[in-house]
Image 1: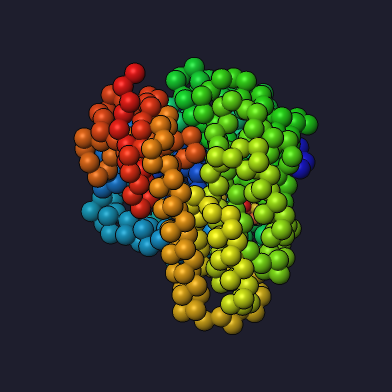
Image 2: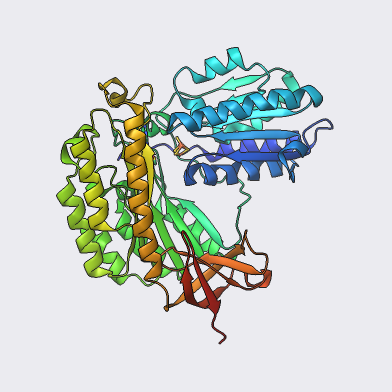
Length: 464
Ligand code: SAH
Ligand code: SF4
Ligand code: F3S
């Protein structure tokens, strides 16, 4: 991975000036609402966006309808994500009829797709601002332009991508935090749009990452998730991902997780880290995508089923209790029933704690979109249904195997189903609900697991 340019500090200062200019305006949005779609990268970007909007003097609105500025941070990884974003935006057109000063902004991965910005400019003239993934840091300047020029601003940059440091942030949680370590992806899996919309791989320096982790630790953060489309490709200042992980571990933040790891270059050092590092949680998201070598080849994943199974074996030998999760695509162009059965048998063999399953969705501009695909959608639906049923049964067994254990839970929130309970995750990543109140949020609590539900565990607090 090449060293990529860092957006100069002077440019970030210039944006800070725009934040001040907007803040000083009489007629400007007073409140904002952000709709985050897609993955953790987008969630983390939304925290920077929120930080910038707050510096501009806006406060978070209680509901979307109350906000003076609504921003959609979009995803385009599958067609339904894109349809959802466009559908939502059309709904805003109606809202704007009653509220003409409403500012509508759309950014993120979808707007970075080829031709999308031009299409939106033409067909959605009520959108005030369209920006892409590479110029998010210029949001203050664009908001200022919308307010002063009183016409839509459409700006999407077609570049490989830069590293941005020093943006303000309004974090979603006080005790769990996402920390970006790299951006972009160079893997070009044939089905995937991400490299096309997020640009080339580029890493932050270890210093910038460690400084952010220390700052978060000082603020009381107890769990961090290191983020990258393929963290194994991390190369910051010559350091590899495993080196970085050892350095982050030494800081003493109680819980560290990371995602996403690509099976083709999960290193021996990284596998060993699961046996050695005190704060690295026994959990790994390792997307397999398919269980058949021919399909994996056509996906350009560059590993085999045997290699993946070997990784699983080695991970479990250094860390027997590791919880593995995965992503799986069903109905890739040309996938035969036999090839699908290979995915089923891999799932039976590995026994994932959870797997996110998707029906293949053709993305314009990717190689697989040109592959012949003669499997009817109904057949793909049947296949994914079978896979979901199998995975659910395995997940339930994994949950049931936890009953009777005592686990340390980092309490995240009051349970959505039962106001007298709180919930949080075990080191392995299982969600546990147990009787408790709001004062426990952000605390580590020892919980005895008493029963397993379909997706979560129940337990009771062990008094110390
Ligand atoms: N960088 C991550 C994944 C990012 S996208 C990785 O390599 O694992 C998240 C998941 O979406 C992928 O793992 C894949 O399973 C799924 N996905 C990506 N493109 C897709 C497509 N065109 N159709 C269906 N699922 C897709
Ligand atoms: Fe997409 Fe593959 Fe890159 Fe993941 S590794 S973001 S699936 S191209
Ligand atoms: Fe979606 Fe972009 Fe993430 S396409 S999955 S939000 S990197």
